[in-house]
Amino acid sequence: MGNKRSQVVWTYTYIIAVIVLAGVVTGAAPKKPVPVPFGKNYVPTWAFDHIKYLNGGSHIQLSLDKYTGTGFQSKGSYLFGHFSMRIKMVPGDSAGTVTAFYLASQNSEHDEIDFEFLGNRTGQPYILQTNVFTGGKGDREQRIYLWFDPTKAFHSYSVLWNLNQVVTISIWDSGSPSNQPMKIYSSLWNADDWATRGGLEKTNWSKAPFVADYKDFHIDGCQSSVNARYCATQGKNWWDQKKYRDLDDYQWRRLRWVRRKFTIYNYCTDRKRFPVMPRECKIDRDA
Ligand SMILES: *[C@@H]1O[C@H](CO)[C@@H](O)[C@H](O)[C@H]1NC(C)=O
Ligand SMILES: *[C@@H]1O[C@H](CO)[C@@H](O)[C@H](O)[C@H]1NC(C)=O
Image 1 (cartoon, rainbow, N blue to C red):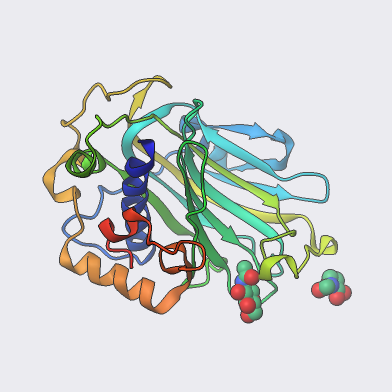
Image 2: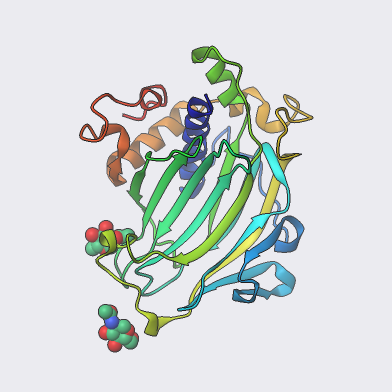
């Protein structure tokens, strides 16, 4: 059940992320994020001493060394909303490192929407890998190259998550949609067993510490308890309004352009793994 819902959620978040990454402003662009310091919405999750606070926390740095990476998470859980932060990925030789930005539910029916930025040797391209876990099951990877260098400047990474998925699901799912609140997470860690060229390129520890920079920790969401099924203000928020329910033609074109030019791997078109195309791929006009 959670399955289909999250697929839809994922598509929209991915689309929005791609559009925001591209810096495209359209009629249905999400509301402009308000830059707020880290401490307003987030707390460190682990290795607290590997997070450095600059300018009163309006700018933070995560660092990874031989001993540990680090990460942080939103204080609240949210059921729908707009989440955004600006990140400058680990520059130079970042092979083996992964910087992740993800939404995850807290309960046993684990849902997760992942954006993982896989580092590379100096001058070689990063990869953005996305995945979706529903009920603890993933296997929905997509990988693309980026059309800009994510280490040269801060770029906004946003997720717009709204009721639309509920609307969509109710069309093709007979069960009543269950929506799970999620927290937002980010982390930097070593994954040189798989991240860069499938694990061939190892982290060069003589280059440590590896540092990723963050700013503008905007959250505009419906805060809910971990097990809530409905957002208290459901239907009344700006992201619930009609123009945010689907992409317009221009945004679809933009998304197709990204998929066509930058796709490295898409599980939707992998007939070896999935002889029959997963259902959500068709619905999401994914392949
Ligand atoms: C790293 O660079 C190599 C060589 O250009 C490329 O094959 C690979 O896809 C790049 N990205 C990652 C994360 O491996
Ligand atoms: C690791 O970095 C050191 C110092 O910059 C360099 O001499 C060495 O060649 C690098 N190793 C790899 C495998 O890139």
